[in-house]
Every structure is written in structure tokens, then in C-alpha cells.
Amino acid sequence: MSERGFDQASETAEAIRSRCGAAPEVAIVLGSGLGDFATTLGDGVRFPYTELPHWPRSTVVGHAGLLVVGNVAGRRVAALAGRVHAYEGHSHATLAFAVRVMALLGVRTIILTNAAGGINLGFKEGALMLIEDHINMMGSNPLIGPNDERFGARFPDMTKVYSQRLRFLTEEVAAAIGVPLAHGVYVAVHGPSYETPAEIMAFRTLGADAVGMSTVPEAIAARHAGLEVLGISCITNMAAGVLPQPLEHDEVMETARRVRGSFIALLEGIIGRL
Image (cartoon, rainbow, N blue to C red; front, side, top):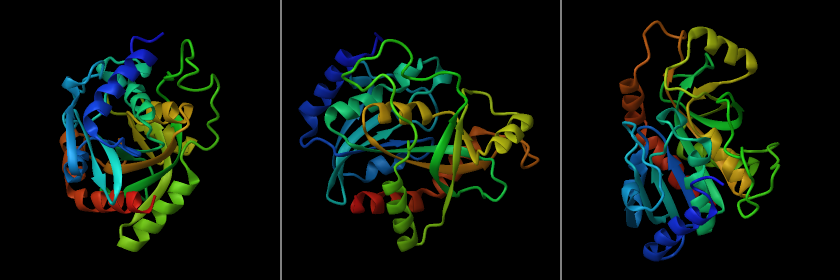
């Protein structure tokens, strides 16, 4: 059993439940530079990750390391400002821990967001992409090892990881508020080095539209636990070889800040229509 197994997840969920009041119905994992959404929750109860038992610590710029449970559009929401990554040295089971805690709190819908590199040549920096499916190129899976049936079944189906219902709802919200929304397949890699132009060309051939270093382990764990999943990528830069300049994390952060208003409006609209 993982060092962050069912007992540890239950202890963390109870620590949150004891302080948050009404339990959250929806959880949102906020990617690099997108954590400002957590500050918009009404009557928010804040939980720095350092104060939560067993919760893994994020060390990446743009990941605040803060859980906020509060209200959005009449719903109780848990916003996770920051996540941990495999490239920080964490196992994929550890990457799944936050999602499993959310499931034990009673969350049934999870929105996974990330900053991603654009592979699709039709994308522009700052675009928001609705994830229709993913390709796991990380070389691992959060379900490897003994299976605890209290989290989910041994062989969960991945035919429809990203809920069609939630994707349709998101399209309606985006159209109503005038936020352009792209669609595509997200490919996850281990990192932390950015991809080579040859790798990007290969991923494009495989059918990927955007690339990043997160989200897929969380999506797998969420489906394992029976959660309904929505995925949204912010295309913060074009992937290696698409443009002549080198890739830098500062560019990712700056683009995420630029789309802050549209991103928050889209999330609020989605939650309001759930």
C-alpha cells in the first residue's frame, strides 16, 4: 500500500471536513499561474498545504500550495491552488492523493486545469482548450500497485475520461459569455525539461493538440473513484519548434495572468450551471 493510502487520505479529508463547514460538491485543480481563481471564492476557508496531514508539497513557481473551500454561484467548491508533479520526485500514487481526498470529502465533479504548450498549429497563445481526451506518455500510472477497492475497481474504464455532459455544458457557457474555446487532445509527459521539436512533431502525428506535465494522473485517479471529470488547458506557449524562440516558464506565467479574467468567468459560469 502506498504511503499515502486510504487511511492517510481519510485522515486528511477529516481534517478538512472539521473546519470547512458544508462539504464541497465540486473540486477544481488550478494549474500554473491559474491559482487566482481560489481568491474569488465567497466565505472561503483556507488550508495551506503545509497544514494538512500527509498532503504533498508543491515546489513549483505558480503553484501557491493552498486549498480554499468556499462558495461559487451557490455551490460549495474546493479550489486547489497548486499541484505536485512527477518531475518533483513524487510517485504517481502521490499525484493522485489530492483527488482521492476530494472523493472522500464527497466531491463528485472535478475540474482539472493546466498550462500547456500548443501543438496544434491553429492555436494561439492564451487560448483555452477543452480537453476531449488524453495520451499518457509519462511512463507510469497512479493505479500501479495493490488496488484498494475503497478507492475504486482494479480495472477502471477509460473510454470516456472527460465527461461529454460537462464538455457540452462548457461549450454553452463559453458561447454565452463570449470566451473562445478550442478543443483537443492533451498529451502528458514526465518533464521537467521541455520537449524537443522532434518529440512535438511525433505527438502531432499521434493526434495531440497540447502538451503538459500534469493532469493525466489526476484524471485517471478521478475516474477510478467514479468522479465526473472536466479538463481545460490554457495554451500559455507554443510547443518546441513551432516558433523560433526558446521556451521559458516566465512566458507560461505571463500568459496565464493575461487570460485570468476569461478563465475565471468560464469557471464561474460552469459551476453556476452544474
